Length: 124
Image (spheres, rainbow, N blue to C red):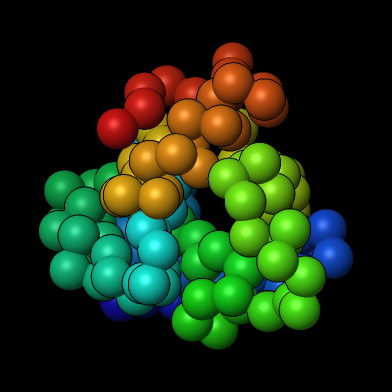
């Protein structure tokens, strides 16, 4: 079952969907692509949960339940990666696998290049 909530990430609130055991040995952080939302991961999250893996799908600004802004410059991979880092901090995630689809791939790559890469177990 998916649990949803909004988390503060800098100047925006991001929609987050969590599934699987909270005390799982593995956590996957899922980032969607453009013209999509965190809900794209629903079936993947169900399957990961059945495998005993915790998953956290984070909606990027301007998508789904996440806040939108009026500034075009807020919709760049660097900004999304900073939002992702802030959300990961708010959620208290320590070690995780990052999974990105399409633009989400650029976002998770930017996260690894710009943020705390020591927390990342794998990049998909």
